[in-house]
Image (tube, rainbow, N blue to C red; front, side, top):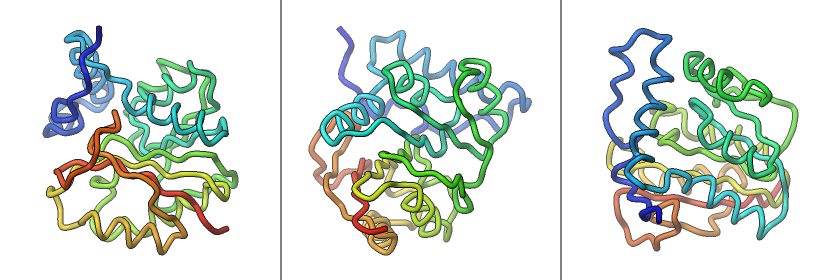
Amino acid sequence: MARPTDDSARPERRRSTKRHLPAYERGDDYDRRWEALAETGTDVHGEANLVDALLQQRGGRRVLDAGCGTGRVAIELAQRGYEVVGVDIDPTMLDTARRKASDLRWVLGDLSRLALDEQFDLVMLAGNVVVFVGPGNEREVLRRMAAHLVRGGVLVAGFQLGVSQYLLADYDADAATAGLRLTDRYATWGRAPYDGGDYAVSVHEKTRY
């Protein structure tokens, strides 16, 4: 039986070593860390499980994995029957994603400037993407994510708190500016109740066009 997900053990919550690797190895190294975690019996599909549950409840089949990295979550969702597009700014991560799933659509792009001219039922910002977009870019990223949602669609984001000056209250305020309303918040992708800890998974619904 897989052990419950412990978000503190997740690879994206530890200091990245990819800057010390040759470019072509960065994505593969990231995947190896997830594979090692899976071998311990830890459930590494918490993000996909939550997205799956939300779409089963709300309806919809189209998912944008924004900041998809090597495609770990996007590929899992595609295997469950969802139509998924992955976007990332790091070409080395996308190279790994394409080698694993060449049939899926992988887009090289900056989330703060993203313009795919299409909309999705759910947009996901996993893997601490909100932390990594850079100070001052968060509001524009949320605006672009909202623009890629159908009305009634949801943005799901999980990120570590306390590693930057960007607070959860700032995230909620920027989401509201983008036309997004908070519907749920959890402490983990496994939907443990949020009690003010250092990691939050937030679900916001698009309320306007």
